[in-house]
Image 1 (cartoon, rainbow, N blue to C red):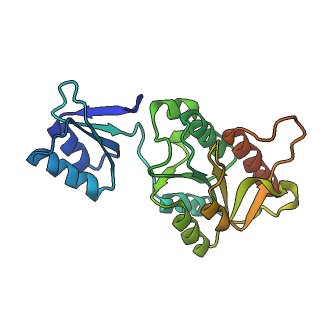
Image 2 (image 1 turned 135 degrees about the vertical axis):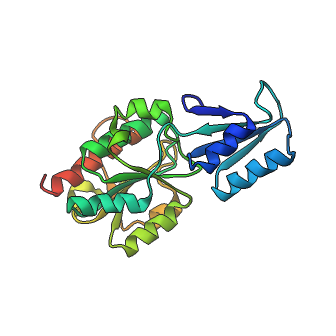
Image 3 (image 1 turned 60 degrees about the vertical axis):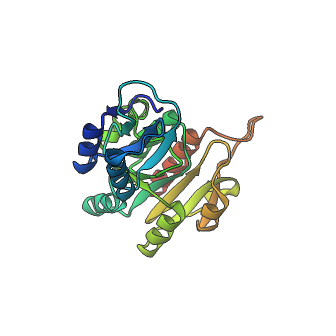
Length: 239
């Protein structure tokens, strides 16, 4: 199970957590338990689109269910856009396509804050959540930079395009970032450490940006790539 998040055990405690609106990242159902109270919890999990995992082995005094809650609450995409509007700035969002390393996620949130991004958007299922490790790696930036979870990155990009944003994704074969106009309402897409930006997400971006490199290896850590491109966006905004 995930560590450094809030673990909630016991049927009543989990049900109340759901009903109070607390963000539950995952629900574990252990030992095949599917009686009436557990079915009620599963209905709440479905209603809130919570990830559910069924685990065969049962250990501990947890009444057959264990929930893992986020260390911090999530924002909405609308919250991020509203933040830009309140600051009187064109929106600048960072979208992460399957970043699963909590240290990288925390580092990117920290960079997003320092580079003036209005928020970070992550995938609901294929991404690290806001665990204690992420919070620590962000150096407190999660207190100031909203993080939104979405079920479909591609659809979110399309919706934000309809709101006037355009998108650039990091790609080793992309146009040199210095040759791109990165001003205006923009979304920066960073892919996973191993696979990069997925094909479908890349196809829905307007441009691909390459980072000049002169070393002997051919790629940067995802959080470093995010930092380099975010600061090029900041530079072009004249800040």
